Picture 1 (cartoon, helix red, strand yellow):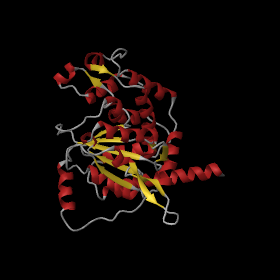
Picture 2: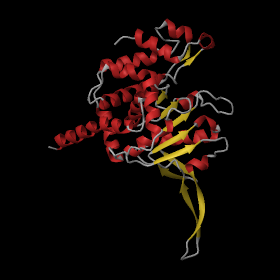
Picture 3: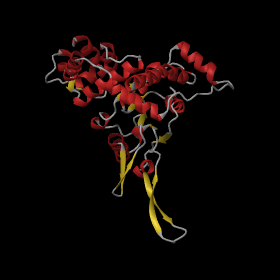
Picture 4: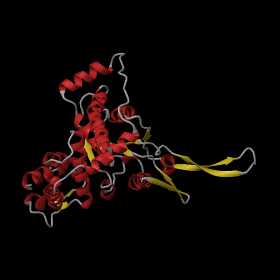
Length: 329
């Protein structure tokens, strides 16, 4: 009876996911692929790096999602003078009014929220970037020898502008690897942009409903890990990731253009995200399409191309596209 109850509960939660996307669509016109990938990261328990030119509603997208999820939200604007204590928190001296005894109390920073928008992460120095990435990896913050657990679920969405490079601090490859997905936003279509002009320049403002709670998301994260994936598909993911490494790749394209390939973390990410995508689609088993679709946002920041590739204008997405064609299930 308990298993039946659990299955009914999970199915009810999965049925709310399309409703959640519709609710987000009240505020965000288009960008459905990016919204879906952020939800995949949330269900898989990872973090996102969101790249796009200014004005593509990156901040609004994340804020809207937090409102429909009934989860705490904080936005941190990264600047060159931002210090680790500004995001993690710091100790302040307080006094007990009854005893008069003074003591230090840890004052939590904006990092202590379910969803954290790290706006323009490449504008802050490596010291502050490292503090953020440590919290992403460990799920807790250490200050003055004491550990402070971050809320669960915990999702960081970092944004960066691909245009301006002056005065920025690009993330090293090892730190990029900490992000589950690297999502690229493109300009809206002509019809979508027309709808943006109509919906954002008047007085009407849609009201958003709460669809899921933090407890619901934790249950969905547990369900995601229980989704079935066959041994054949696991073998395909393993071969696809290993094929990104030039020294052992069967692809002449990778050998010609690649400098180095993805590590084992990429395979783990591909399995989890494929499972999350299956859940969003209302399935409890992974299909090949789940893997092929997510190969791009998972692998594009985990590959490095040589100077010849950069000179020829070859991108990591082009390399992934060739690999998906060549590596067969």
